[in-house]
Each structure stands twice: as structure tokens, then as C-alpha cells.
Length: 141
Image (cartoon, rainbow, N blue to C red; front, top):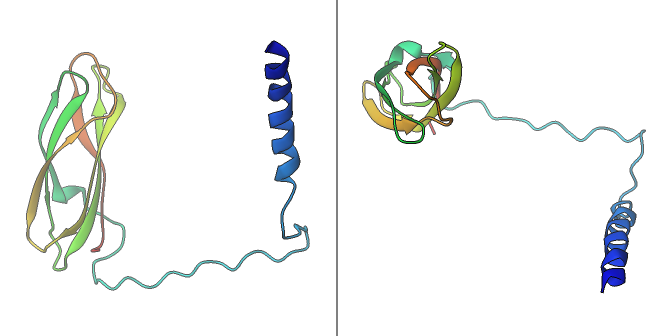
């Protein structure tokens, strides 16, 4: 039984290595690079990637049994529907960011506010503080 297992340990990886060299297309250094992907222009008038930390308000930042709970309000201050991507930095007692919480909403109408509770990702012992690390407004989806 042991001899069969040892042979399999050698045979399986060796076969896998041999088969990785097989293929139906030749790979040459002279081959032209693949064509670059093109992207269509955004259809919304909202500026892509606009920093909008002022549109985000942290209403609570509390530790829970395992990580943290962060409640935020995001208000679309533009005149167009927009997608929002928000990152909240969560710091421990020493003031250094140790965890984060993420929020993504594909469409928030102009002037509307969305309130959402988002979880932190890493356990922190002791007092915590939260700050908006990133807030981007993108074309709505």
C-alpha cells in the first residue's frame, strides 16, 4: 500500500508538469500582443471617480462581538443618478487603521440619502474610531 501511494505522489505531479507544456497554439516571443480592450464612454453625466467624502456621514461606529458595525448615510449631492463606492477606515486604540468596512451602491438618485450598516473586517480589541477613507461617485449602473 505504501509503495503504491509513493508512486502516485511522484506520478501525478510529473504527469501534470508534462501536460502543461501541451497546447494547440505555439507561443513565440515574436507574436504581437493581444488587442487592447476598449471601453465605452460612460452614459451618465456624473463625473467618474469624483472624490465625494462630503457626501458620506458616519452615524455610528461600534464594536460588536467579533468585529465592528459602522452605520453610514450616503447622500447623492449631484444632479444625476450615481454609483457610490465608500471605504471606511477603522482604527484601534493606537489610532492606526487596522480594519475597514466597504459600501457599494450601484444607483442612488439625485438628492436621495441611503442609510446602511456595514460590518468591519478585522477584530480589534479596545476603543475604535472610524473615518471615511475613500468615497467615489461613478456613473450609475
